[in-house]
Image (cartoon, rainbow, N blue to C red; front, side):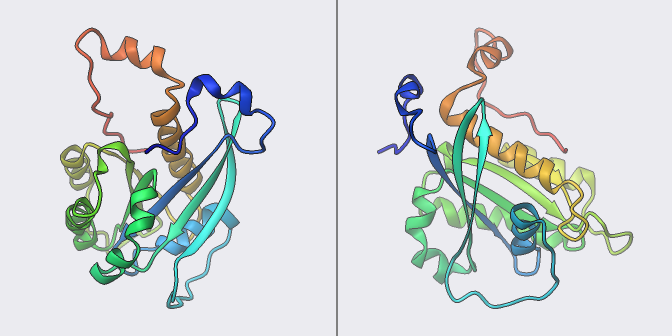
Length: 212
């Protein structure tokens, strides 16, 4: 059951503050900077202090897309297999997934495949917007992930990626903006005419694998 409002009914809902609500969540290894990225994007705030989360934390903001206002809820969850089970309702109702890794840990990039497989046990991911955020782009040394590594994973999962730094803020706004636009467009098909020209007669649902 879709909770989305059909595009043809948008005009009748203009009196509401929000046309729709989108739920997203971040997943990745510990210490890759998931909470830091959310704080940087939603609150323009950064701290290296780490606190243990006893329950899911929600970051809420709104965005305009194609002149319509949408409410966005980013779920910051503490993930392990037990937590995934207890948060499966959040996973099922979500509209998009952001996989997070850090440049100084190639294992965190490789584990995205593991996280993806675990999530597939709970939900069909084909209808959800997905993207990879590569954090800690401010590092000058200790880098373990190459552009080739990122592109290979993007091609394997058929997703786009963005390199960014929660510490400096570099690339954070750009990455989140791209992800949000893709997620909303996936539902409301604002670019359907343009995409139709791109896809041609055969049709191709594969996303461009880009590194922003």
